[in-house]
Image 1 (tube, helix red, strand yellow):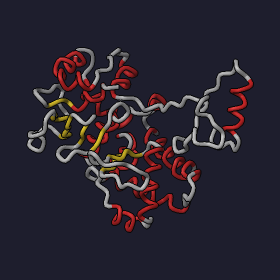
Image 2 (cartoon, rainbow, N blue to C red; image 1 turned 45 degrees about the vertical axis):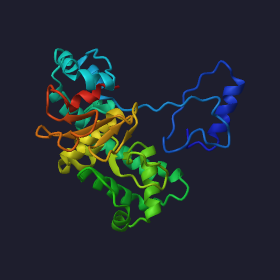
Image 3 (tube, rainbow, N blue to C red; image 1 turned 30 degrees about the vertical axis):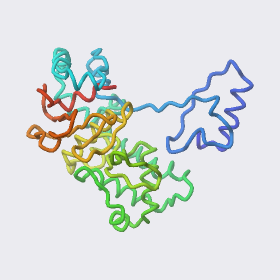
Length: 301
Protein backbone atom coordinates (compact mmCIF):
# COMPACT_ATOMS: atom_id res chain seq x y z
CA UNK A 1 0.00 0.00 0.00
CA UNK A 2 2.80 2.43 0.83
CA UNK A 3 3.72 2.66 -2.87
CA UNK A 4 0.33 4.19 -3.72
CA UNK A 5 0.51 7.97 -3.08
CA UNK A 6 -2.88 8.65 -1.42
CA UNK A 7 -3.54 5.18 -0.03
CA UNK A 8 -4.14 6.24 3.58
CA UNK A 9 -6.80 8.85 2.76
CA UNK A 10 -8.61 6.54 0.33
CA UNK A 11 -8.51 3.66 2.80
CA UNK A 12 -9.94 5.93 5.52
CA UNK A 13 -12.75 7.02 3.19
CA UNK A 14 -13.53 3.43 2.20
CA UNK A 15 -13.74 2.46 5.87
CA UNK A 16 -15.96 5.42 6.77
CA UNK A 17 -18.40 5.23 3.85
CA UNK A 18 -18.69 1.49 3.20
CA UNK A 19 -19.46 -0.01 6.60
CA UNK A 20 -19.93 -3.52 5.22
CA UNK A 21 -16.47 -3.50 3.60
CA UNK A 22 -13.63 -5.41 5.26
CA UNK A 23 -10.12 -4.45 4.13
CA UNK A 24 -6.83 -6.23 4.67
CA UNK A 25 -3.76 -4.31 3.52
CA UNK A 26 -0.02 -4.91 3.65
CA UNK A 27 2.88 -2.51 3.56
CA UNK A 28 6.53 -2.13 4.41
CA UNK A 29 7.40 -2.58 8.07
CA UNK A 30 9.96 0.21 7.57
CA UNK A 31 7.10 2.72 7.27
CA UNK A 32 5.13 3.80 10.33
CA UNK A 33 1.76 2.96 8.81
CA UNK A 34 -0.21 4.89 11.44
CA UNK A 35 2.03 7.97 11.65
CA UNK A 36 0.47 9.70 8.66
CA UNK A 37 -1.36 12.91 7.81
CA UNK A 38 -4.57 10.86 7.86
CA UNK A 39 -5.59 9.28 11.17
CA UNK A 40 -5.90 5.49 10.78
CA UNK A 41 -5.11 4.70 14.40
CA UNK A 42 -8.81 4.42 15.40
CA UNK A 43 -9.66 2.41 12.29
CA UNK A 44 -6.84 0.02 11.50
CA UNK A 45 -5.41 -2.75 13.65
CA UNK A 46 -1.85 -3.60 12.61
CA UNK A 47 -0.29 -7.03 12.97
CA UNK A 48 3.27 -8.14 12.39
CA UNK A 49 3.43 -11.67 10.99
CA UNK A 50 6.61 -13.35 12.21
CA UNK A 51 8.37 -16.22 10.49
CA UNK A 52 7.79 -19.78 11.64
CA UNK A 53 9.09 -20.82 15.04
CA UNK A 54 10.81 -24.20 15.26
CA UNK A 55 7.62 -25.60 16.81
CA UNK A 56 5.48 -24.27 13.96
CA UNK A 57 7.95 -25.64 11.41
CA UNK A 58 7.71 -29.13 12.93
CA UNK A 59 3.92 -29.01 13.08
CA UNK A 60 3.85 -27.85 9.48
CA UNK A 61 6.30 -30.39 8.03
CA UNK A 62 5.71 -33.40 10.28
CA UNK A 63 1.97 -33.02 10.79
CA UNK A 64 2.39 -32.95 14.56
CA UNK A 65 0.28 -30.96 17.02
CA UNK A 66 2.92 -29.93 19.55
CA UNK A 67 1.62 -27.07 21.76
CA UNK A 68 3.36 -23.90 22.87
CA UNK A 69 5.38 -24.22 26.07
CA UNK A 70 5.81 -20.92 27.95
CA UNK A 71 9.36 -19.98 28.86
CA UNK A 72 8.73 -20.47 32.60
CA UNK A 73 7.65 -24.06 31.96
CA UNK A 74 10.67 -24.81 29.78
CA UNK A 75 13.07 -23.46 32.39
CA UNK A 76 11.45 -25.38 35.25
CA UNK A 77 10.42 -28.60 33.52
CA UNK A 78 12.58 -28.94 30.40
CA UNK A 79 13.40 -32.65 30.80
CA UNK A 80 9.76 -33.79 30.82
CA UNK A 81 8.87 -31.39 28.00
CA UNK A 82 11.78 -32.60 25.86
CA UNK A 83 10.79 -36.24 26.48
CA UNK A 84 7.21 -35.52 25.41
CA UNK A 85 8.46 -34.01 22.14
CA UNK A 86 10.97 -36.81 21.52
CA UNK A 87 8.07 -39.28 21.60
CA UNK A 88 6.65 -37.53 18.51
CA UNK A 89 9.71 -36.45 16.51
CA UNK A 90 13.51 -36.48 16.60
CA UNK A 91 14.22 -32.73 16.77
CA UNK A 92 17.98 -32.59 16.09
CA UNK A 93 18.07 -33.39 12.35
CA UNK A 94 14.94 -31.28 11.84
CA UNK A 95 16.58 -28.46 13.77
CA UNK A 96 19.50 -28.32 11.33
CA UNK A 97 17.05 -28.05 8.43
CA UNK A 98 15.07 -25.36 10.23
CA UNK A 99 18.16 -23.22 10.78
CA UNK A 100 18.80 -23.26 7.02
CA UNK A 101 15.34 -23.38 5.44
CA UNK A 102 12.53 -23.26 8.00
CA UNK A 103 11.75 -19.65 8.91
CA UNK A 104 9.83 -18.56 5.80
CA UNK A 105 7.06 -20.88 4.57
CA UNK A 106 8.05 -20.54 0.92
CA UNK A 107 10.48 -23.44 1.54
CA UNK A 108 7.55 -25.63 0.43
CA UNK A 109 8.15 -24.32 -3.11
CA UNK A 110 11.66 -25.79 -3.07
CA UNK A 111 14.92 -25.43 -1.17
CA UNK A 112 17.17 -25.08 -4.20
CA UNK A 113 16.39 -21.39 -4.72
CA UNK A 114 15.37 -20.63 -1.12
CA UNK A 115 18.43 -18.61 -0.13
CA UNK A 116 18.46 -16.83 -3.48
CA UNK A 117 14.89 -15.66 -2.78
CA UNK A 118 15.95 -14.37 0.64
CA UNK A 119 18.78 -12.41 -0.99
CA UNK A 120 16.29 -10.94 -3.47
CA UNK A 121 13.93 -9.90 -0.66
CA UNK A 122 16.78 -8.23 1.24
CA UNK A 123 17.86 -6.43 -1.92
CA UNK A 124 14.29 -5.25 -2.49
CA UNK A 125 14.05 -3.88 1.05
CA UNK A 126 17.40 -2.09 0.90
CA UNK A 127 17.14 -0.73 -2.63
CA UNK A 128 13.41 0.06 -2.70
CA UNK A 129 11.71 0.26 0.67
CA UNK A 130 14.48 2.13 2.51
CA UNK A 131 14.13 4.88 -0.10
CA UNK A 132 10.92 5.91 1.64
CA UNK A 133 13.02 7.08 4.61
CA UNK A 134 13.85 10.77 4.57
CA UNK A 135 17.56 11.29 3.94
CA UNK A 136 18.20 7.76 2.67
CA UNK A 137 21.04 7.77 0.12
CA UNK A 138 20.32 5.11 -2.52
CA UNK A 139 24.00 5.18 -3.51
CA UNK A 140 24.89 3.61 -0.13
CA UNK A 141 22.99 0.36 -0.72
CA UNK A 142 26.12 -1.65 -1.55
CA UNK A 143 27.63 -0.55 1.75
CA UNK A 144 24.54 -1.71 3.64
CA UNK A 145 24.90 -5.12 1.95
CA UNK A 146 28.53 -5.09 3.07
CA UNK A 147 27.44 -4.32 6.64
CA UNK A 148 24.99 -7.26 6.66
CA UNK A 149 27.74 -9.56 5.37
CA UNK A 150 30.00 -8.49 8.23
CA UNK A 151 27.26 -9.21 10.77
CA UNK A 152 26.59 -12.66 9.28
CA UNK A 153 30.23 -13.77 9.35
CA UNK A 154 31.26 -12.35 12.72
CA UNK A 155 31.47 -13.83 16.16
CA UNK A 156 28.29 -12.45 17.89
CA UNK A 157 28.62 -8.95 16.57
CA UNK A 158 29.50 -6.15 19.01
CA UNK A 159 29.70 -3.07 16.80
CA UNK A 160 32.33 -0.40 17.15
CA UNK A 161 30.33 2.22 15.30
CA UNK A 162 33.24 4.61 14.78
CA UNK A 163 35.44 1.94 13.16
CA UNK A 164 32.53 0.40 11.30
CA UNK A 165 31.39 3.71 9.83
CA UNK A 166 34.96 4.37 8.68
CA UNK A 167 35.30 0.89 7.17
CA UNK A 168 32.14 1.00 5.07
CA UNK A 169 32.20 4.75 4.41
CA UNK A 170 29.01 5.85 6.17
CA UNK A 171 28.84 8.63 8.78
CA UNK A 172 28.38 7.38 12.35
CA UNK A 173 24.94 8.97 12.87
CA UNK A 174 23.77 7.81 9.45
CA UNK A 175 24.95 4.29 10.23
CA UNK A 176 22.99 4.08 13.50
CA UNK A 177 19.92 5.42 11.68
CA UNK A 178 20.30 2.70 9.03
CA UNK A 179 20.65 0.06 11.76
CA UNK A 180 17.40 1.31 13.29
CA UNK A 181 15.51 0.96 10.01
CA UNK A 182 17.11 -2.38 9.15
CA UNK A 183 15.67 -3.62 12.43
CA UNK A 184 12.23 -2.20 11.58
CA UNK A 185 12.50 -4.01 8.24
CA UNK A 186 13.15 -7.26 10.15
CA UNK A 187 16.57 -7.84 8.62
CA UNK A 188 18.49 -7.44 11.89
CA UNK A 189 17.85 -7.59 15.64
CA UNK A 190 19.56 -5.16 18.00
CA UNK A 191 20.42 -6.03 21.59
CA UNK A 192 21.00 -3.31 24.17
CA UNK A 193 22.66 -3.58 27.57
CA UNK A 194 20.48 -4.12 30.60
CA UNK A 195 19.08 -0.81 31.84
CA UNK A 196 20.10 1.18 28.75
CA UNK A 197 17.50 3.36 27.05
CA UNK A 198 17.12 2.96 23.30
CA UNK A 199 16.72 5.56 20.57
CA UNK A 200 17.30 5.88 16.84
CA UNK A 201 20.85 7.15 17.39
CA UNK A 202 21.71 4.75 20.24
CA UNK A 203 24.41 2.25 19.32
CA UNK A 204 23.33 -1.38 19.89
CA UNK A 205 25.61 -3.47 22.10
CA UNK A 206 25.09 -6.56 19.91
CA UNK A 207 23.61 -7.03 16.46
CA UNK A 208 22.17 -10.24 15.03
CA UNK A 209 20.53 -11.00 11.74
CA UNK A 210 16.78 -11.40 12.23
CA UNK A 211 16.85 -15.16 11.73
CA UNK A 212 19.27 -17.94 10.86
CA UNK A 213 17.94 -18.41 7.32
CA UNK A 214 19.19 -14.90 6.50
CA UNK A 215 22.53 -15.87 8.05
CA UNK A 216 22.89 -18.83 5.68
CA UNK A 217 21.76 -16.74 2.71
CA UNK A 218 24.38 -14.04 3.36
CA UNK A 219 27.29 -15.99 4.80
CA UNK A 220 26.93 -19.62 3.66
CA UNK A 221 29.97 -21.66 4.71
CA UNK A 222 31.53 -18.64 6.47
CA UNK A 223 28.97 -18.69 9.29
CA UNK A 224 30.17 -18.44 12.87
CA UNK A 225 28.58 -21.22 14.97
CA UNK A 226 28.22 -19.05 18.09
CA UNK A 227 26.57 -16.30 16.05
CA UNK A 228 24.13 -18.81 14.55
CA UNK A 229 23.10 -20.20 17.95
CA UNK A 230 22.50 -16.78 19.47
CA UNK A 231 20.63 -15.61 16.37
CA UNK A 232 18.27 -18.58 16.73
CA UNK A 233 17.71 -17.98 20.43
CA UNK A 234 16.93 -14.28 19.95
CA UNK A 235 14.62 -14.90 16.99
CA UNK A 236 12.48 -17.36 18.96
CA UNK A 237 12.02 -15.22 22.08
CA UNK A 238 12.01 -11.61 20.92
CA UNK A 239 8.33 -11.52 19.97
CA UNK A 240 7.05 -12.40 23.46
CA UNK A 241 9.83 -11.41 25.84
CA UNK A 242 11.96 -8.43 26.84
CA UNK A 243 15.59 -9.24 26.04
CA UNK A 244 18.69 -7.30 27.04
CA UNK A 245 22.44 -7.90 27.32
CA UNK A 246 23.47 -8.78 30.89
CA UNK A 247 26.83 -8.08 32.52
CA UNK A 248 27.38 -11.84 32.63
CA UNK A 249 25.98 -14.26 30.06
CA UNK A 250 24.46 -13.73 26.63
CA UNK A 251 20.83 -12.76 27.28
CA UNK A 252 18.79 -11.35 30.16
CA UNK A 253 15.11 -12.25 29.78
CA UNK A 254 12.23 -10.28 31.34
CA UNK A 255 14.58 -8.77 33.97
CA UNK A 256 14.76 -12.18 35.62
CA UNK A 257 16.52 -14.99 33.74
CA UNK A 258 20.16 -15.08 32.59
CA UNK A 259 20.91 -17.33 29.62
CA UNK A 260 24.29 -18.41 28.26
CA UNK A 261 24.23 -20.03 24.81
CA UNK A 262 26.89 -22.50 23.68
CA UNK A 263 27.96 -25.89 22.38
CA UNK A 264 28.08 -29.25 24.17
CA UNK A 265 31.22 -28.35 26.13
CA UNK A 266 29.88 -25.06 27.46
CA UNK A 267 29.86 -24.85 31.28
CA UNK A 268 28.20 -22.35 33.60
CA UNK A 269 31.43 -20.75 34.84
CA UNK A 270 30.43 -17.30 33.51
CA UNK A 271 26.94 -17.28 35.03
CA UNK A 272 27.14 -19.57 38.07
CA UNK A 273 26.93 -16.64 40.50
CA UNK A 274 23.78 -15.28 38.80
CA UNK A 275 20.33 -16.14 40.15
CA UNK A 276 17.96 -17.89 37.73
CA UNK A 277 20.74 -18.71 35.28
CA UNK A 278 20.57 -21.37 32.56
CA UNK A 279 22.59 -22.79 29.69
CA UNK A 280 21.05 -23.19 26.23
CA UNK A 281 23.13 -26.00 24.70
CA UNK A 282 23.30 -26.90 21.01
CA UNK A 283 23.34 -30.50 19.70
CA UNK A 284 21.73 -31.82 22.87
CA UNK A 285 18.63 -34.03 22.61
CA UNK A 286 17.72 -33.73 26.28
CA UNK A 287 19.08 -31.63 29.11
CA UNK A 288 19.89 -31.92 32.81
CA UNK A 289 19.74 -29.51 35.75
CA UNK A 290 20.20 -26.00 34.25
CA UNK A 291 21.46 -27.33 30.89
CA UNK A 292 18.59 -27.01 28.41
CA UNK A 293 18.65 -28.08 24.74
CA UNK A 294 18.85 -25.01 22.52
CA UNK A 295 16.21 -26.39 20.16
CA UNK A 296 13.65 -26.45 22.98
CA UNK A 297 13.55 -22.63 23.06
CA UNK A 298 11.91 -22.88 19.63
CA UNK A 299 8.68 -23.96 21.38
CA UNK A 300 7.88 -20.73 23.23
CA UNK A 301 5.66 -19.52 20.34
